[in-house]
Image (cartoon, rainbow, N blue to C red; front, side, top):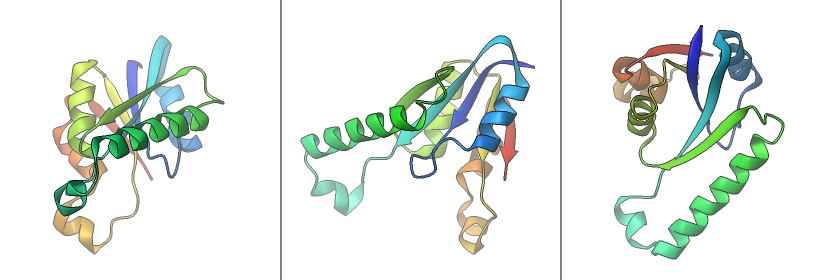
Amino acid sequence: MYKRILVPMALDHGLSPETLEIARALLHDGGEIIALHVYETPSGAVGAYLDEEMVRAGFEMARTRMAEKLAEHPEVKPVLKKGHSYRTIVDYSTEIKADCIVIGSHKPGLRDYFLGSTAARVVRHAPCAVHVTR
């Protein structure tokens, strides 16, 4: 049983019922589940055309959508961070001393074999146990 479980989530999918159910089953009494969404700011050529206000507005919109997605789960603590998905997940799990990450994954496509999926990168670099759901 784990005391601090980190559950990364994508706002376009929300918090999957299966992932949340697994996190709850793995949670020690009195433990906490933290849902993390990583807001990836546009980089490169696209980022050059966006001003700071547009980025801030996008971040606030993400915060609102996250609150909506988690409204039915008041026991889940929402956290929104800026960064690159897998690196931010790994860094934040280290920062909060998570003892487990429960992360969803899709069936890998050809691109994933060359670049690696976010879940695969988290598994390789996480400082704690990782439970992958599909």
